[in-house]
Image: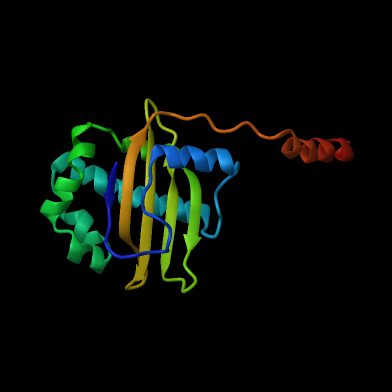
Length: 177
């Protein structure tokens, strides 16, 4: 797992692991806080992961640095980014499936000032899932990456729907007949 820190962001702790992800899934079925339009959130996540993937393939992270928010670029030069992504790059993880597999977005949150956005979730890829925790800053008219945590973990099973959640759907079907 790679975690980069730049400045204090939306206020949640930055530690992001498979165990935390599993707890979130188990504690909150149907988890995402949809404050951000889903297709836009998915596009932002894929955009950042593509830049990381290209950096991993080439060993050159200047595009990722230059594409991110100014504060991120000021605190992370290309050499530092290469060092921080060494383990992920060394694992040989192919991130291309994140372009075609739909992500599970567990959190999509915009700050009270509408200037920061946090997207947290994972791609249910195989043989391992791919997690992300990204913070974006509204800067020069677009959302630019401010903070990133990515990694892979063994697949987890989503919690089964509770019987209570299934009952209203069954009642709706009966009343429509």
